[in-house]
Length: 313
Image (cartoon, rainbow, N blue to C red):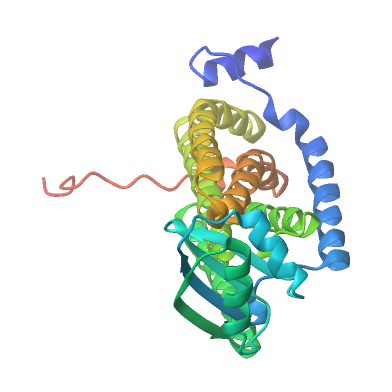
């Protein structure tokens, strides 16, 4: 009873949620989920898009509004199985992505004309070689690694290395689980997925920074109370903000998924998975790991700086 009273006093009389009471269950669940996702990635691999494997991108305008299902079926019947067919701009503009770099313009035009029974105007044709795809994989991986290193350096300087390590592991945790889901459902990996993963990292990082800043502030302002209690207080104080921010973000992404068209489905789905996992990991990975690493008040609290001009008189 005394301990509960002290915890409530730390939170200005409001009831404090004991988040850290479930940290071991959260750790076990995260480890199982990570191992499962890594196994899925190792077994099923990724469905790399044309941006990485090489292929042909054809943009065309049709006289009549096409039925994409009929058009897709007609192209697949001609022997092109690995295709992506999307509307672009308006109902008469489409983009066809085919995993082939052969010169097939006339054949594709003929197939499309037969399917839609109208004229076809080619607006753009691009060929992407496999060598460009490999280079994009390397540069994308390097970009993510450099971003994680910069984040680690910033958080270590801005807060404390225990909080920094917890936040970085939480970010890696979010990315691996998101990639595992993409691999499980054979979602094609393209440039929009890379951009979405970077956005997930940014969102999860923002959540971790807000919580870490409140933890640091409470360690500085509260001169009594165990780290276990102070972290619970900090998570409780930021809970309302976390729920509101995540709910609004998920709602916006869900609307984008429904009304954004086929070109944004993969992007919005990746964001939806990443934001959901990131919200949980900022509580039960970043903060819990900092506590397990032995964070204490003396690790964060700095010596008070004398007021400006105090030595002038």
